[in-house]
Length: 269
Image 1 (cartoon, rainbow, N blue to C red):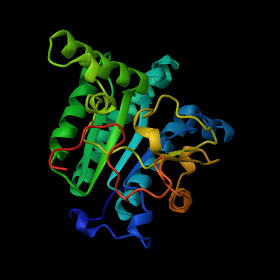
Image 2: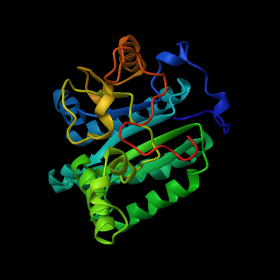
Image 3: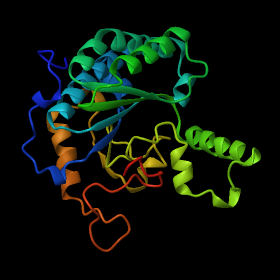
Image 4: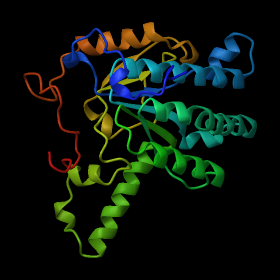
């Protein structure tokens, strides 16, 4: 689980790596639960259950390494197409994760944010999400962003719709719309863009995950399935990230903490 006490973050052990080589924001596509289970003769739902255990490990390790933001691809907008029994089990896992782990996340100083559409989401889950965000909103140790009922194309379309509505009302000039304005209308414009995106199971694609925000992210694709993701796998991804030369389109490396790609500057920055 998350912690053995109720203290907040200054008690997370610091990693033995230079801060400059560490990502501020890590996005994770947690892929391969079903294949992990099938390869072992288990029902697919057992893979999802073990995947939650891997998620708990990952949040704890990210906290120890003082990673400020972790975004997980928990349930995509396309996942509704899966068999009804599997969808029901996945929603049940989310309910149990929030109910069982929220207090511990809160005690560890983790802020919970949920991005994605709220349409067609069961009311009890919306209530749980709202309670989780409200309870943890003042926490500062780490932000756990849960992409639930999320699709990046829909997120960009929603941002475009907001800008179109503002233009119709005469609040903005359509000719003035730029990437920063689009970024400012995404689901979580205050969250910095991911530095590193990890995908397990050997697949090498984004699958509609943070496509706008990932413009300058580094990608690490691991051949293991998500339930097997552990400290060694996390360290492998972080070591690959540390070895990359991030130039952001320039000839020399950019500052260690570049502004979010295509987003409006944060207030006061």
